[in-house]
Length: 176
Image (cartoon, rainbow, N blue to C red; front, top):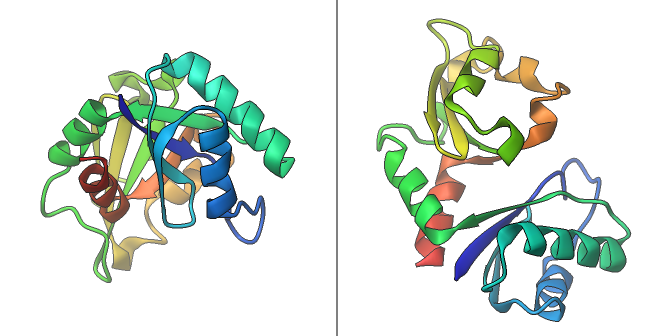
């Protein structure tokens, strides 16, 4: 089964540095096949038939062994990434005029009700829930007014990992 691993909190602000070539080797060593990394933010596409819960634990252990870091790994299959990439409106992009972030949710917070917990600013933020993720869009001119910054450091923030819409769309293409 084609899967995507999203690592939380690596290579951010010079902390938790993880070399992608070594990370590929970590996945191969744990039994994954056809391993491909995309950009330096912890996106790993691979083939593996084991259940995601078992696999996430195994990968987290391999990362800790190889890098000395306790990193959470969130796994998604190709069908869920395809659905998510399709659900993001074409007009929601990440460029010099707009920011669209995809907040991938761990299972214990994955529910449409999670939207009610977000510090959304009316007239600034546009939010949509898609199973497994929240898509959050705002104009670049409103970046400091967006409620997204108020999410940082919360318990909810610790139960997600974020990628921009361009990355999610590219990951969907690479998984095909």
